[in-house]
Image 1: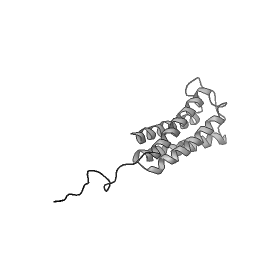
Image 2: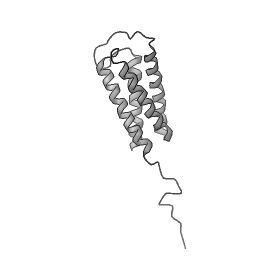
Image 3: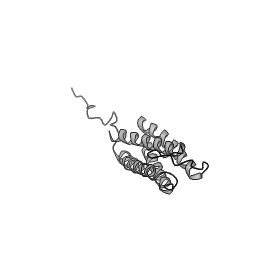
Length: 130
C-alpha cells in the first residue's frame, strides 16, 4: 500500500512539474505571462519532471530502485522550484515544493519497507511430512 501511494505521489508531482513549467503559466492564479523560455532552470525542471514520470511508472511495476531514484529526483525538483519562486507564481511553487516533500517522504518510506514475500519464505509454503 505504501509503495502504491509513493508511486501515485511520484506521478502527481511529475505531472505538476511538467505542467507548471511547460505551460508557462501559473496553475493556481492568473497567468504570469511568458516565462522567457530557454532558461536553463526551466529546462532542468522539465527534464527532472519527465524522469520522475517514467520513474513513477516504474514504481507501479514494483522496481525497488525506482523509489530511490524518486527520492533523488524529488530533492532535485525541490531545489529547482525553490530557486524559481520569483518567476513562477508563488502558489504554484509552494504546491510544487509540498508535492516534492510528500514524494520525498513517501519514497524514503517505500524504499525501506519490506518487499513481497518470496515463494521460499512464504509461510504458506510449509513442508509436508507424512
